Image (cartoon, helix red, strand yellow):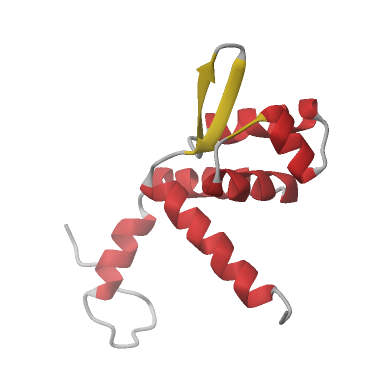
Amino acid sequence: MDKFVLPHHHGEGQTEEYLKEQLGRPDTFQNVAETFRLLDDTSRVRIFWLLCHCEECVINISAMVDMSSPAVSHHLRQLKAGGLIVSRREGKEVYYRAADTEESRLLHQAIEQIMEISCPAR
């Protein structure tokens, strides 16, 4: 394989090869884009953030975020399909919580960091 060389060299060295290799894997970037797309709605971010802190049923989530149960259920389906949350059934009740994955933990941390940066001083 020929060495990759940029038209305008800045002297970074082997970094160019690594970057070119990573950019040549569009599926990886597609997965990242799909994950961020899950959080492109304020209501989903709020619900996801809530479920990072507790396990709750649809009715309680609806009350906490001041939304209808069908609207909350819609967002929960998307978050669950994206692997950010999980559910468990207890009798007739279904409880939701953030998935125990590195991806969920990182997104939770990012949300909290951004909230801290962007929130006015209390």
